[in-house]
Image 1 (cartoon, helix red, strand yellow):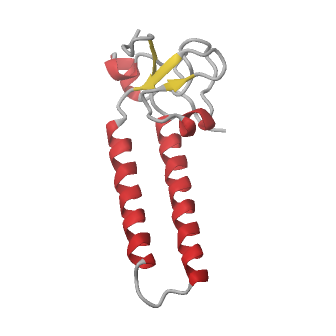
Image 2: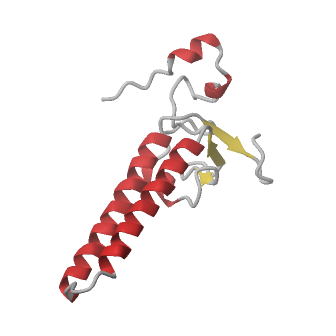
Length: 132
């Protein structure tokens, strides 16, 4: 299995990883259970999560690098597929292949982002959206 120990900064009081539950990233601070990838993938934004076990509002810390990379990958994939679909002489059957490749690429990139985010600290969020 994977090692769930906190990064080395935890021993030095790094403020970015103070919300690990028992030193485990990706676990809900409310109930202590591991947040499933499904909950991360289905959330509209990584700062608007809800724990499926206890229902607490959650958000990840330090998300902008992953979000920026995900947006860049989605834009690149979409642009490549649109250019290919608008090129002359493309058969109708071949269009579906390119649309399927786009869908697979988008699903894979979302899965990758969820895996990266699950290794980060979670905070509980109050109803007004502020950490609490």
